[in-house]
Image: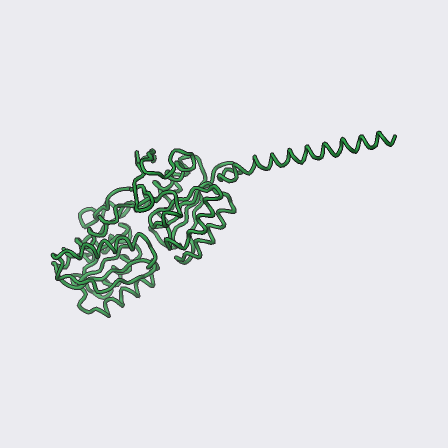
Length: 350
């Protein structure tokens, strides 16, 4: 009898060990799809914009969502109340815990997000930046709206034409850490080095932090500090709309010229009134849409983010990964000029 009991106990112990091993294997299998954002069904693709209340960002997130849902996946749209790196870091940590498949981010700071984004990549999440880039170590690839050099030089050429070739100009930017804004501004300054601009003086680069009220205040401060100011370049949709309102309210049509990057729906009244003779932009919906397809191509293994990688981005057609400093990027296209001749047809589009 004693021998029988011992034998039974041994069998039970052996079965427990086997069961435990089996459970560990099952846990490992179930963790794999979770790590790719596939737990519970559809893969989850996240996008983090700079801040809420930004129409440009909302359009960008709409484009991302359209692409992800076209592909049969689930989109998670996020943006902090304030355009800070700290707020975006908290969101990255949250998305890591949700085990999403990919994170696309329009960065509030190129370097501060690196530890959080590296942590995400180590967790198997595909990371890309769009619109405003993170540094090359923090991403697999960047989705760029247009060539930064072309944007910067075009904006200077535009405002100089408006002011008749001479006078003081100022820039009303977003945040001082925004990589896209800073790249454009550097190229603006580079363009101004040409001797043909010897009579044009850049007096100030102001930052409205992509916040409507602060951008209005900064525009007003520029006019007060520089009474001879002849032109404002606002390479941000929030800033150019704020400057348009200030110039309109103060009756400065024709006295201070305005150009930059704006949404047709927000800037139509200022273009039609002549406050802003013309401006430039690309379709932010397409920026988000291209980013969604890029994220899916990374997750599905169609590309790795290396130079020469090619894929089809839905209705945007074939795209190729190209060099971008120490990293790589995918280019959407050239900036488009909006003026009185075409603003009516575009203001209802975005």
